[in-house]
Image (cartoon, rainbow, N blue to C red; front, side, top):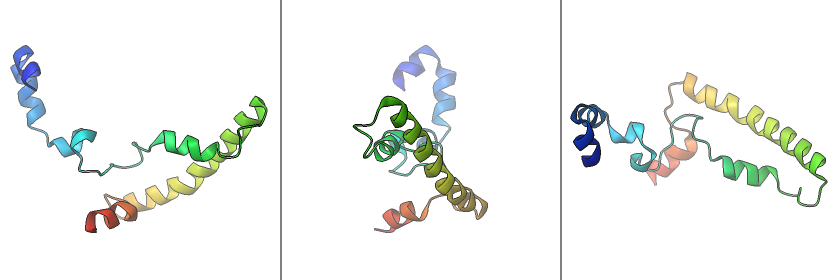
Length: 98
C-alpha cells in the first residue's frame, strides 16, 4: 500500500476505504464469496479421475460431460442459497462455528 501511496495518494485512500475482507482473497478469513471463486484445479482433478488411459478425444468428451454434470448439480444450490439471502454455503457456516 505504501508503494501505491507514493505513486498516487488518492488511489491509496480509495483502496483503504474498502474493507479488505470484501475485495482480497488474502484477507477474507478463509471465506469465499459466491460461485465466482470455485477452485477449478480441484474440479478438474475430480473430473479426470479414471480418465488417464483414454484416447484424447474420449478424455475431452468425458471431461465435458462431467463438467456439465458438476455445474448442473451445484449451480441450483448456489442460486437457492443466494435467493434465501445466505452469504455462505452450509459448508462454510460449519467451518465458521468450529
